[in-house]
Length: 597
Image 1 (cartoon, one colour):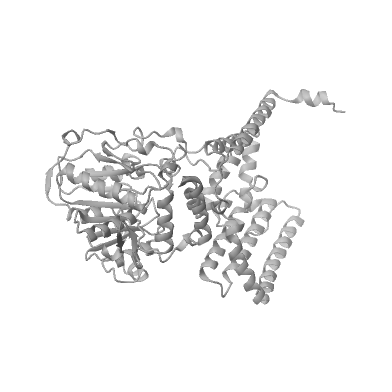
Image 2 (cartoon, helix red, strand yellow; image 1 turned 30 degrees about the vertical axis):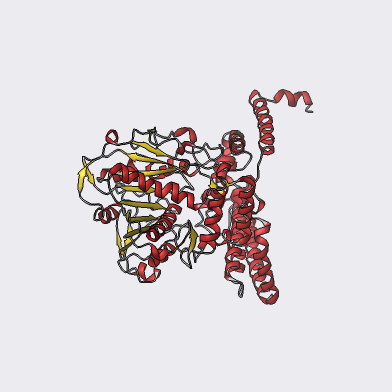
């Protein structure tokens, strides 16, 4: 007979330490959760408010066509029963083996136990049968408004992804095996990771994607030599040291997006576009934007143009003694560069000689994967959020983007961190991805309402700074680089915007890969190729079908285009020769500001 004393005596020192640690972590967990400053409920990913309209439309269609419901249910029930019978037959043979499995291509189920163990195999196959039934039912809906159907597809897929058996400890063989191998230490480490993430984000559950201690700005990332030569409330202007004795006379100003930090273009020496540009013989300036807080609530697109673009152009012209500059705009900064070009045309200002756009949307008529987030209910939620906070908090934008690729950017990292107890990797790209920036309240609403929802720049005119700005006013030579698998700025939408620009000299390039990897594509890697076609009048589909594919990075092709518009060679302007003494070395102070400061 076992007594309480026997049980107490069998407790090991390690078990006692673990129990004490669990108690301490539980106290930290409660404290972290109590300090939450939650976002407007409408913005918390897939939820009832956003789902209701789409699902109501679905059920209305089903009521009008009940035969379709019975057909789907009969098919689903038949597959489920067949699956159950096959599992029973396999077990009745007296061997612990799984039945034949036709679902073998899903990378979430790489562990061999998903195929060989009857329990895990049954769970996996039933989940995939359920997922197939939901997808088929949604796809077969007829007569539904296209926007609502897109939303229904999105939300149903979110439910499918969320309910995957890999997301639950009891049905994840990898996590269970790790727990056994480590005597439960992996679960304890996972709880530690969970609590640490909550504490770091004021009670918001945001999975840490990279080891933040592995990187230091200016030490092992963002190390290209340069100097901050100007600063105002909106930006720091960085002048980079020349890497050649002579340079093209026309300087370059690079405007990165302010949704993230500029150093995505200067992660490390091997893939730094900033470093590469200086090595090709150019004088390069890069804007590093402020990370705004509530005091920036009234800052709008006009402030980014006036105190960012126009000020940077004025300063660079004065420093270099040149009358014109070449400009680069990435993502939202490319959109705003287009607005700036329209404004300058209205004013008769020819300061910009050419414009390069990276993954830039200027025509928002096709909302694509962002359709669920660009309807009034979601935008109304953002408006309430910025009224309450003064700005759009970084984690809301980050979470929105993550839900577009939830398996890769939410569930898989969470499984590794919280169930497997793994430490986040020392990965520079993921470190940058987690180093987000806030958006000023006014600017966020101008962009979402006027550009994304109403498409005013391409359709009728966008009112700003006393002018009606039009996409057709962009008449300088342009080169636009879009990414084939970009889920943020779809290449076809980028292409349609370029088609509507008034420029007589247009070059369009589609690079392989996505929004970041397609742009940060160093020639030394020879990883992703690119497509070109000189006929910009074709439809996107015909353009791509007739495009020529070239192996390797687009960087050299773009540089060949740029140098024709960059003037003669002159002696390089050294940092010490500048008329400005410099405020500090690159990467500057603004880039180090945390979104949660």
